[in-house]
Length: 209
View 1: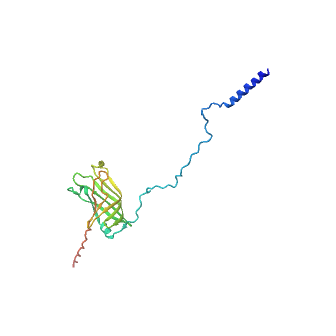
View 2: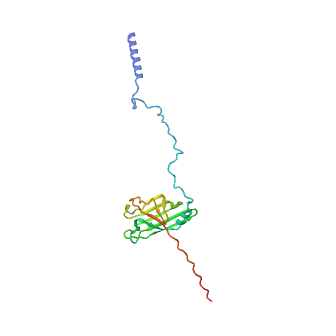
View 3: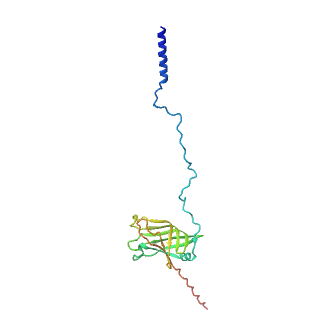
């Protein structure tokens, strides 16, 4: 009797130990979820970063005059000649104005082509003069070319610092960046000096007695 009782106690103890060793089944088998998420290394803060690109176009508050003679000549630039149509019969020059707004020189002009077959085409210039030097006028702005057969008539623009160069005794400043960005044609965009008309004094009328 005692042997049977000892055997039963041994079996019960072994079953309890086996039940303790057996892990309850979970949906996270074979391993339970961690009690804490793994740590991640933080990168450098994004505050205080600067861009290599300029935030905006620099403002021009003064035109640099490195040649008074060139400035006096350019002040009387009055006409625009557009090389694309300059040799077409019936072509006429356009108008350009050079004005001073405080310490800054401003250039604005436009030429509307009237040559046969080119009606509706035009070119324009709009900008401020950054620098006037011997044989050079630098304008920050844009020159636009509208040609009906190019880009379905959408104006093609050259923008930024534009260099108008003059050589020798010429009275013409030609745009160095004058290739049309749409079809690659050399436009030959010129600003032309025009001698101011001399005002002749009106002779005094004799007084009637």
